[in-house]
Length: 166
Image (tube, rainbow, N blue to C red):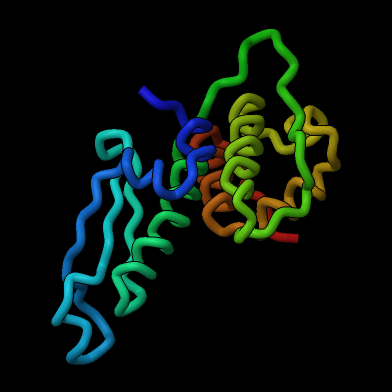
C-alpha cells in the first residue's frame, strides 16, 4: 500500500496509474456543448479514500490535468502521517514561499498539517517546531482556503477557537 508521500512524489502519469478514472457528462452552465461529451473527470485513489473531480472545461484533457492538481492537494489535506512520538519533527527542507503551481506545494502543505496535527493544532507550538513565527505559519495557511478550513475544523473539534485571517 502506498503512503501519502509516495503518491505526492509521483509524476502525473504514475499517479494516474494508481487512480480509478471516470469520465462523465457534467451538468451546469455551458449550454449545448456541456452535455454532449463525457469531458468531466473524476479521479479516485486509495480505494475511494480521496476523490477529486474537474468539469470546468470542455476538454477532457484539461479537466484531467486540473483534477490531478486537485487530487494532489486533496491527498495532502486529507491524509495525515503521524510524527514519531519522542522524536523532534522534521523541518521543511525547501523554500517557504511556494505557490500553488509549484510541484512541491502539496507536500509542503501536508508537512505543515502533519506538524500541526502532532501538536494538536496549537499553532504556536507547531510554528516553534517548524522554526518559524506563529504569524508566518498563519499567513501561509491563510493563503490556502482548503488548508485554512481543515485547521479550523480540527481546532473546533478540540474546543479551540478558530484562527483569524491576518
